[in-house]
Image (tube, rainbow, N blue to C red; front, side, top):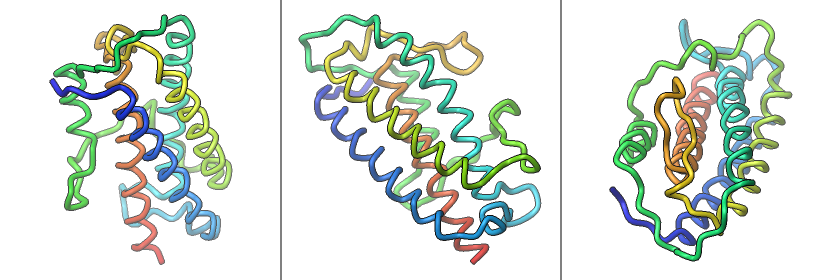
Length: 186
């Protein structure tokens, strides 16, 4: 279990969320066809990547908001992550060399390639980043350990701090994927 200063953790996550949002703007220069073009068979296009992120973020932002608004403030600035949260974050986080552990997304979190509007997905992701930013600012005074968020099949719960770490790392993982797709289709 990792030990964090809540203030430092939240500041780091805010900075990383801002980078996600800023780096996503680069995809706005691509045409709609480029955004929908997969780099190969069975691979996601940039639009599908952002569609996946939006489906995932929409679900968890609502869950976190419902919990965080009722959570009491905590005077402690110390946050101990959970072993399960550390394990999930380690698996989802891009490695220093830019590689990622290959994972399969649940079908309910896969965007429909035929119906997707690439520009809407990019715009929605920007709004999700704004919502995540608001949550992080609100979480700066909350107990990140005692508040838990249902995760995966809702049997597993992650501490609020671990869930926030996971959401940002998940965005970074797919931003890297989208950047790699952009290189392949350009």
